[in-house]
Length: 290
Picture 1: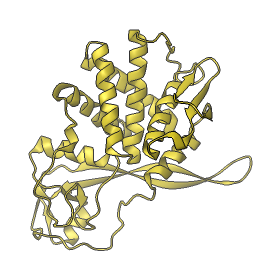
Picture 2: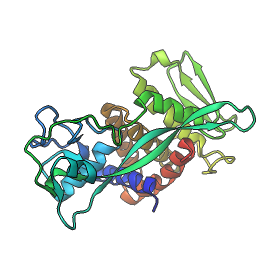
Picture 3: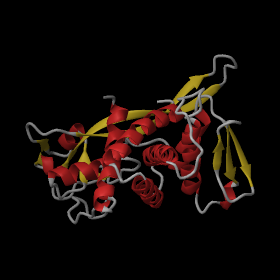
């Protein structure tokens, strides 16, 4: 399994947990953080919060291990702070997007595309010798170079064989399979930029089902099991991309509720959600050109 596939499997597992528990499993609050000025998953030596898919990855790992701290750092950062990682402890893989500059073959123009990088971090509960409060230092190791909205926009722009995206003064968004275009309400009609990209990712996910892309044999018969399965694929795809971009928690909550709705419509079958997550991983890879 590739590193990207591992990350997306964590997201799929979170949806399954949400179906079983009716909660968002990566939002559990912890009281002990290892820093006085941050109450979320953060880097111990910079004090900065983790973003994107990383809080969920770290939260799931911490819950599974029973750790109370939300402070994390790389092996090198822990050593520099005077601590050690206990022998035999296994780190947790997190991801960051970096800018990769490429040159168009035909035009010779420089183009910036997003690229995933991976780091291994350890929870402070896996360490010995760290001070009660680690003093922050200037260290950009592993820090993202993209703002969430900028990254979402670049992913859309970089999508291979992307369908035409049309904006109109309307109250609906949809993908037209026969004519192969996405129709979106004008941007100013959305409540937020994250809401806009969540919707656009959903419709672009449908477009990956076109025969010239991933060929999922799209069914437009509203209410059918096939329609429900395609909706699961599209919304989990949007969740993958939104979470990896660092788009807001309220959007992710809405996506989880949407997945639960369609899972119930097809008898809340966890295997169906995993099947849809597998299709969604391929769709997300296609859109983000991973």
